[in-house]
Figure 1 (tube, rainbow, N blue to C red):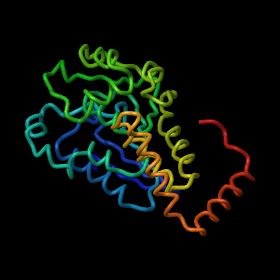
Figure 2: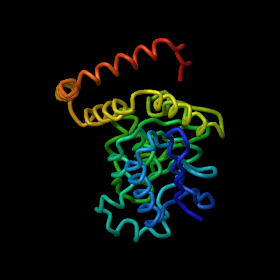
Figure 3: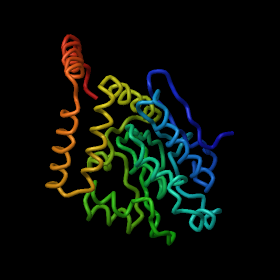
Amino acid sequence: MDLIQVNKESGGIGIITINRPKSLNSLTRAMMADLARAFKEMDADESVQVVIFTGAGRSFCSGVDLTAAESVFKGDVKDPETDPVIQMERLRKPIIGAINGFAITAGFELALACDILVASRGAKFIDTHARFGIFPSWGLSQKLSRIIGANKAREVSLTSMPLTADVAEKLGFVNHVVEEGEALKKAKEIAEAIIKNEQGMVLRIKSVINDGLKLDLGHALTLEKERAHAYYSGMTKEQFKKMQEFIAGRGSKKPSSKL
């Protein structure tokens, strides 16, 4: 049985599933390396335009398998090729997390590495770093505060109390909360909406948003302006013609329903 499953559907959707449900999808060192390779594979495959990331069973990911903690934390943790979060951050294509059940500690951090999150109503995000004496290394101590605010992030991390899906949605961390068993379906709907757009620009917009988040607003606006100028300066008359044809074709169609 593959503990990290990779499926590619027709239409441009790739799905990566953590498949260790009897252990609530806890991660071994080998699984982390396989997960990193899966994301790297999705980035290289031009037939994949959007990646959905989920977990089998009643948990998204319950964190690191602490029975093998030493091999995880003292292994070659600085190797970017086997680090799933680094590979997720390098992935050019949008990543939609379909979160069912628990996303605990490392699982929480994997969720944070997604671009868009859909969570089942019973989903819970829990940071147990402080409870078990584990130092965060996949970004939770820095990313969460930038999304939900420093005070709430401190409470989540210092108390190890669950952040429910409904509260996470109100705080802007989760995009959509759906009924149990509906997260993957909703993620596919969002993926299909993304795929209808011009894919080169989808990649550029994801990149400028994510790169801009690393900067203060002034420098981020400059980054956007520079990339826009570079993009338009490099366009040919044929590309402008195709843009006009694309806009004209889209304008003749009825607008899609809201996400």
